[in-house]
Image (tube, rainbow, N blue to C red; front, side, top):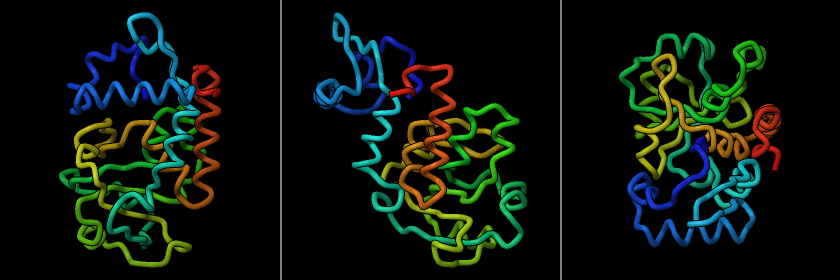
Length: 201
């Protein structure tokens, strides 16, 4: 999502760990859907990031596309929870926690964190180690799922000792989590669009 333009598709198979034919087919489909634009030599010259995220959210959902989802409440609050988190835990934060890294600090600090969404190999085990209490979705402040893609535990960025997925994944997960998460995703994309036109459409 943050790849510098233009993008040379020749390097994508190695970077993504997939076959060249898979990348070629994907780029053709994205081009036909109007989600990217290509220049000479098949270079990707424009990525319509907002449209790409929204299209991705139609085929993927944090809640439906992953495994062993657990809803929990942090009895001592989210701030305390993450201050005392063992930095050796194998996890990745997504949704609000990851998406807000692109916002100015004062803007991010002014937004209440309603739901902490995490990826972990063993959601129930992580919840037990963190002292979380299992509840229904309507009362939860933490949701944890096991991803099908283990690359989430090595990609993204590490902030404050916590790995956070890339902005594209974070926004897609926000769009597919319960309210008010989708509205937050739209607000973040609106902010990104003020400095990057590719987030306008």
